[in-house]
Amino acid sequence: MRKVIVIAWLMLLFSAVGALFWYNEWVYHLPTPIPENYKPISQGKIIKLNGSIGADHSKPLFLHFFNPDCPCSRFNVSTFKSLVRQYGRKVNFVVVVMNNKYYTAKAIQDKFDLNVPVLFDTSIAVSCGVYSTPQAVLLDTQHQLYYRGNYNRSRYCTDEKTSYAKMAITGLLHDHARLIFDRLALRAYGCSLPNCTK
Image 1 (tube, rainbow, N blue to C red):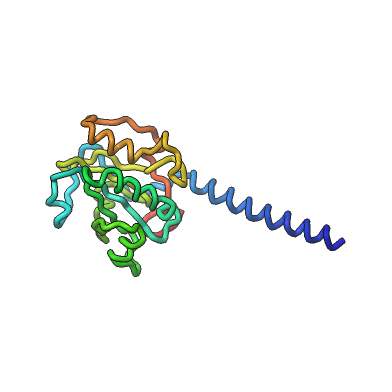
Image 2 (spheres, rainbow, N blue to C red):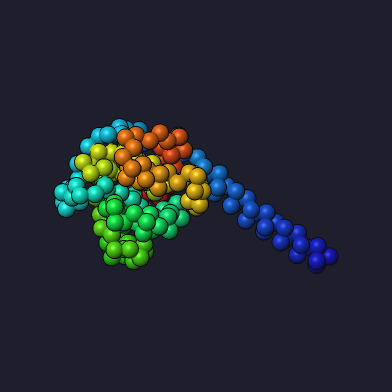
């Protein structure tokens, strides 16, 4: 009788863990709700940026919108790092932190193990039409919006066939005037701003 109770308890526990995992996967695959006051920004629009970031037009600019409290953002860290390693000589990379509760630029750089500029200016998200994390924004050398969207259709960013951010960088570097992406690339998935909610 004791074995039956233990087996039943373990089955219940594994079922609960499986259901929780399935629920989280299902929630992730739902698009992030579009805010009521959202103003879409069209491709080709010039994005005005302040400071040294706004003054540098020597290379395309890749803005990584990141919330340290967002699980989707945390899953994305290795993908962003690989893009910086692969394209860091041809593209300027910047992390835009969307949650400044208690983080410093150094803490974010340590989290990524990268020495890239870190900004805490949430107005950049509004300028670029970003309302969730993680999101990628790629600006050409004139700071015209070339791409705003997801890194990948996979939660863990492991699907090479849908490496949207990487495709955008490659397209811009090869002078493709305009790439056509599917709705999974352009519809925001992840944590809503400004808080980490779904």
